[in-house]
Length: 135
Image (cartoon, rainbow, N blue to C red):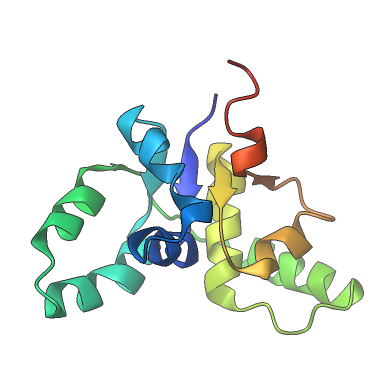
């Protein structure tokens, strides 16, 4: 199975103890998770401010995929969003989607934008229901 990129929205739900996201613990244990600097930048300032060192160590121990931005491709993604009636998908989500597509990663996100983009981009949305189908 491909690595699973966990979006900051899903990390937040996992850290809050949301039962719907507790399967992430199994993914972490099985070394199936990954992250990127954009997601770390969204999460780490708050974690450091709250002095939650164990969470910082956890996030920094996960496989990290480099973000390489192709701005023209992002513009093309946004044009597709507009054509499909989605006018409020932010650049951050576009960059994360691009990172997933370039590295053949699955994604877990609470954010509905990824599910919307998966209607016309080949994003692989990872859920608890399809978590261990191969096993």
